[in-house]
Length: 403
Image (tube, rainbow, N blue to C red; front, side):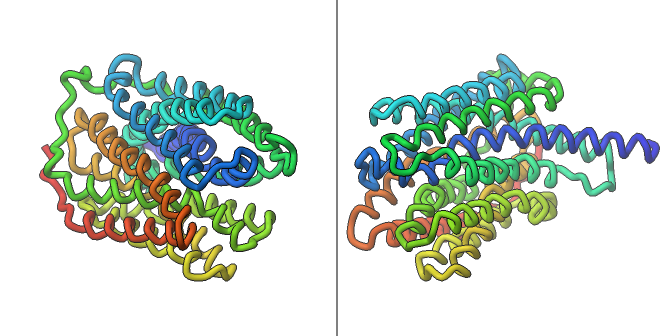
């Protein structure tokens, strides 16, 4: 391979990785994590308790679980790219509809449906990123463009969605007006539509998923048990922070400009995580990365509980952002390292299902505790404890003999 050919291959892989990252921006950054910024205005306008506010994200996670459950068969039938783009288009439409209703039942149904649609985009994008990472190693060996970096770029796209949300929601939230939060949802949907179009144009045509849904290689559940358990604790713990942290900061009298800066800091941390952890994702085959990142998240979660000082708050946001999506990337890397290619769709979906199960319980549990003595601070302290437990569990995961 000539230097010019290698450079062209590297540029092609980077373009496709960045296009795929827009799927993460839509499915997580816009569809899920923008809710933290809208929770306060919606809660005040609609008279929600913390439990009800958390239950809305529980509904979103339940939809995500339903989407993840059907993804192996869906990708085997229509291919990963069709699932990726179709999920993004559906997510954009559903976000716009959030801004057209006020009934709790209708909002719950929309959170459920948007969770299912975003799962299609996120799981398919993860599989395509894993494939692209393998192509990167083959196309440009020794270039530093490894599978870990490609996966980091994909999941780091969530940071773009978080940053866009940080600026978009305050710009469109009509503070003090009846249902003034609705234009922000409509704006989020419009941006999601634009990003999905760009993603579709920049993503290469995909090969069929290896095997049919019936013939894809099985996943050794028991052998991956410690990692799966640690990841379930991650789902339980991180979602409490991402649901309620902005509301906690508002209760601590942090101003609107400072909250926007905090959320941008968190989003920039997610983008930076693409490079921070790529080497570890490439080298470590067991549960070490999952354990380390869960431990760091526990620290980041407890910092604003212990102190409302700006150093603690912004340190928490920077650290949390730099870590939490890399936990997701670490499980995709673990699948790549330890399972045959034919088992990748089911392996990625298996971790996604555990991720979703944790998220289903997490927001409602934290909201229920926050409605009692101790408020949100106690609820987020529980989130930190669950993340710490996840670190201990993941540390016991050993590499598998790859077949």
